[in-house]
Image (cartoon, rainbow, N blue to C red):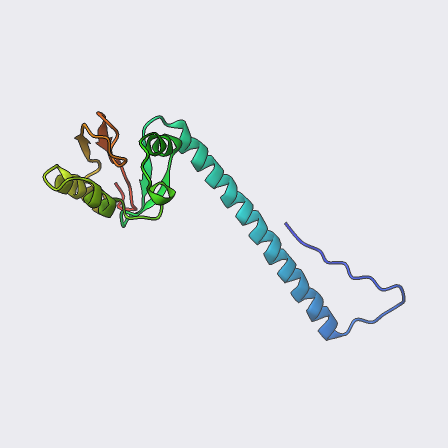
Length: 156
């Protein structure tokens, strides 16, 4: 795709070199801004698709980064939090999932194994981790296996 900038003067004019350079620079800046706008729109569309895909899943989903921070949660997660009067800011988005688990799960529970399992998946030592818990905590779906299939560029 090309961008053409047309400059018009009502009377005859010989363009100086600095005017031509200015026109070229202006064209480049406009082109860069247009490309940035296209990229931002594509990113927004991708985020909308991700959100609708996550929200279509019935399980309580929290997407984690390679450090264990919550990047995104789905509608089922938010609904579960609301139904159980859990007052986690932004449903935990931006917080450390593992630290939040340590704070909310009793130490005599399987919390250490739970955290280790998630850490092993994040580190690429396991392809998934699964544990069945009977609890009412935000971080584990009641009576359902908590399963963590992840891929953080480990080639797995």
